[in-house]
Length: 161
Image (cartoon, rainbow, N blue to C red; front, top):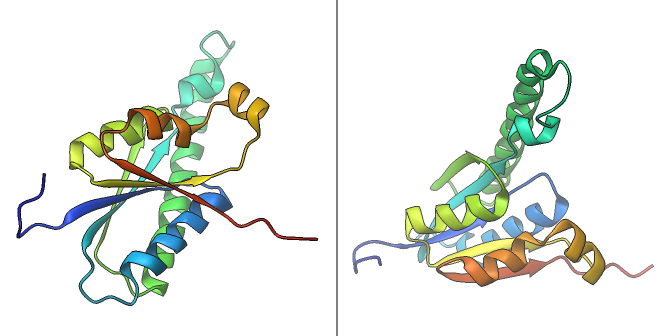
Protein backbone atom coordinates (compact mmCIF):
# COMPACT_ATOMS: atom_id res chain seq x y z
CA UNK A 1 0.00 0.00 0.00
CA UNK A 2 1.20 3.53 -0.68
CA UNK A 3 2.65 5.63 2.11
CA UNK A 4 1.30 9.10 2.79
CA UNK A 5 3.98 10.66 0.54
CA UNK A 6 3.37 8.26 -2.38
CA UNK A 7 0.44 8.45 -4.72
CA UNK A 8 -1.82 5.47 -5.13
CA UNK A 9 -1.67 3.80 -8.53
CA UNK A 10 -4.53 3.90 -11.02
CA UNK A 11 -3.94 1.47 -13.86
CA UNK A 12 -5.79 1.69 -17.18
CA UNK A 13 -5.91 -1.26 -19.57
CA UNK A 14 -5.44 -0.25 -23.18
CA UNK A 15 -5.98 -2.21 -26.37
CA UNK A 16 -6.93 -1.37 -29.96
CA UNK A 17 -10.66 -1.07 -29.25
CA UNK A 18 -12.66 2.15 -29.16
CA UNK A 19 -14.01 0.96 -25.78
CA UNK A 20 -10.50 0.94 -24.34
CA UNK A 21 -9.77 4.47 -25.55
CA UNK A 22 -13.15 5.68 -24.33
CA UNK A 23 -12.27 4.30 -20.86
CA UNK A 24 -8.87 6.04 -20.98
CA UNK A 25 -10.42 9.34 -22.06
CA UNK A 26 -13.11 9.04 -19.37
CA UNK A 27 -10.45 8.34 -16.72
CA UNK A 28 -8.30 11.28 -17.83
CA UNK A 29 -11.32 13.61 -17.81
CA UNK A 30 -12.55 12.51 -14.38
CA UNK A 31 -9.33 11.93 -12.45
CA UNK A 32 -6.39 13.67 -14.12
CA UNK A 33 -7.26 16.55 -16.41
CA UNK A 34 -7.04 19.48 -15.78
CA UNK A 35 -5.87 18.71 -12.22
CA UNK A 36 -2.19 19.74 -11.93
CA UNK A 37 -1.74 17.44 -8.91
CA UNK A 38 -3.86 14.31 -9.39
CA UNK A 39 -4.50 11.91 -6.52
CA UNK A 40 -3.19 8.93 -8.48
CA UNK A 41 -0.10 7.88 -10.36
CA UNK A 42 -1.24 6.77 -13.84
CA UNK A 43 0.02 3.56 -15.42
CA UNK A 44 -1.26 2.33 -18.78
CA UNK A 45 -0.93 -1.39 -19.48
CA UNK A 46 -1.24 -3.10 -22.85
CA UNK A 47 -1.33 -6.89 -23.09
CA UNK A 48 0.34 -7.85 -26.36
CA UNK A 49 -0.76 -11.25 -27.64
CA UNK A 50 1.95 -13.85 -28.09
CA UNK A 51 2.72 -14.86 -31.67
CA UNK A 52 2.71 -18.59 -30.90
CA UNK A 53 -0.98 -18.91 -29.90
CA UNK A 54 -1.88 -16.48 -32.68
CA UNK A 55 -0.32 -18.77 -35.28
CA UNK A 56 -0.96 -22.14 -33.65
CA UNK A 57 1.70 -24.57 -32.53
CA UNK A 58 1.14 -27.22 -35.21
CA UNK A 59 1.13 -24.97 -38.25
CA UNK A 60 3.39 -26.05 -41.08
CA UNK A 61 6.12 -23.49 -41.70
CA UNK A 62 5.50 -21.80 -38.36
CA UNK A 63 9.18 -21.05 -37.86
CA UNK A 64 9.26 -19.05 -41.11
CA UNK A 65 6.13 -17.03 -40.33
CA UNK A 66 6.57 -16.56 -36.58
CA UNK A 67 9.05 -13.63 -36.78
CA UNK A 68 6.71 -11.75 -39.15
CA UNK A 69 3.70 -12.24 -36.90
CA UNK A 70 5.71 -11.20 -33.85
CA UNK A 71 6.93 -8.06 -35.65
CA UNK A 72 3.34 -7.20 -36.66
CA UNK A 73 2.13 -7.65 -33.07
CA UNK A 74 4.94 -5.39 -31.83
CA UNK A 75 4.03 -2.72 -34.41
CA UNK A 76 0.38 -2.87 -33.36
CA UNK A 77 1.37 -2.56 -29.69
CA UNK A 78 3.56 0.45 -30.51
CA UNK A 79 0.66 2.11 -32.36
CA UNK A 80 -1.70 1.52 -29.43
CA UNK A 81 0.82 2.95 -26.98
CA UNK A 82 1.46 5.99 -29.21
CA UNK A 83 -2.27 6.70 -29.54
CA UNK A 84 -2.69 6.43 -25.77
CA UNK A 85 0.25 8.76 -25.13
CA UNK A 86 -1.16 11.28 -27.62
CA UNK A 87 -4.51 11.22 -25.82
CA UNK A 88 -2.75 11.82 -22.49
CA UNK A 89 -0.80 14.76 -23.95
CA UNK A 90 -3.99 16.15 -25.49
CA UNK A 91 -5.56 16.06 -22.00
CA UNK A 92 -2.42 17.72 -20.54
CA UNK A 93 -1.44 14.60 -18.60
CA UNK A 94 2.30 14.15 -18.99
CA UNK A 95 3.16 12.06 -15.94
CA UNK A 96 2.15 8.65 -17.26
CA UNK A 97 3.94 5.32 -17.30
CA UNK A 98 3.23 2.81 -20.07
CA UNK A 99 3.89 -0.89 -19.90
CA UNK A 100 3.54 -3.47 -22.66
CA UNK A 101 3.54 -7.08 -21.50
CA UNK A 102 3.12 -10.22 -23.59
CA UNK A 103 0.35 -12.63 -22.70
CA UNK A 104 -3.35 -13.08 -22.15
CA UNK A 105 -4.90 -9.76 -21.11
CA UNK A 106 -6.62 -11.24 -18.06
CA UNK A 107 -3.38 -12.55 -16.58
CA UNK A 108 -1.26 -9.60 -17.70
CA UNK A 109 -3.59 -7.08 -16.03
CA UNK A 110 -3.93 -8.98 -12.76
CA UNK A 111 -0.15 -9.51 -12.61
CA UNK A 112 0.47 -5.80 -13.34
CA UNK A 113 -1.95 -4.83 -10.55
CA UNK A 114 0.10 -6.93 -8.13
CA UNK A 115 3.45 -5.69 -9.46
CA UNK A 116 2.54 -2.00 -9.12
CA UNK A 117 0.30 -2.39 -6.05
CA UNK A 118 -2.49 -0.65 -7.95
CA UNK A 119 -5.46 0.64 -6.00
CA UNK A 120 -7.73 0.84 -9.03
CA UNK A 121 -7.80 -0.93 -12.38
CA UNK A 122 -9.84 0.73 -15.13
CA UNK A 123 -11.03 -1.37 -18.06
CA UNK A 124 -13.35 -0.62 -20.92
CA UNK A 125 -16.40 -2.75 -21.56
CA UNK A 126 -17.09 -4.16 -25.01
CA UNK A 127 -20.75 -4.56 -24.00
CA UNK A 128 -20.77 -8.22 -25.03
CA UNK A 129 -23.99 -10.09 -24.44
CA UNK A 130 -24.14 -13.25 -22.35
CA UNK A 131 -23.36 -15.63 -25.22
CA UNK A 132 -20.44 -13.64 -26.65
CA UNK A 133 -19.04 -13.17 -23.14
CA UNK A 134 -19.28 -16.94 -22.52
CA UNK A 135 -17.60 -17.83 -25.84
CA UNK A 136 -14.96 -15.09 -26.05
CA UNK A 137 -14.43 -14.52 -22.35
CA UNK A 138 -14.60 -11.18 -20.67
CA UNK A 139 -11.43 -9.49 -19.54
CA UNK A 140 -13.37 -7.02 -17.39
CA UNK A 141 -15.37 -9.82 -15.73
CA UNK A 142 -12.22 -11.83 -15.04
CA UNK A 143 -10.40 -8.81 -13.58
CA UNK A 144 -13.41 -7.86 -11.46
CA UNK A 145 -13.21 -11.29 -9.83
CA UNK A 146 -9.45 -11.85 -9.70
CA UNK A 147 -7.58 -8.52 -9.51
CA UNK A 148 -6.38 -7.58 -6.03
CA UNK A 149 -7.77 -4.06 -6.24
CA UNK A 150 -10.95 -2.22 -7.07
CA UNK A 151 -11.94 -2.58 -10.72
CA UNK A 152 -13.80 0.17 -12.55
CA UNK A 153 -15.52 -0.94 -15.75
CA UNK A 154 -16.20 2.04 -18.00
CA UNK A 155 -18.97 1.57 -20.53
CA UNK A 156 -19.22 3.67 -23.65
CA UNK A 157 -22.75 5.12 -23.86
CA UNK A 158 -24.91 3.58 -26.57
CA UNK A 159 -25.76 5.91 -29.38
CA UNK A 160 -29.37 6.09 -30.43
CA UNK A 161 -30.19 5.81 -34.12
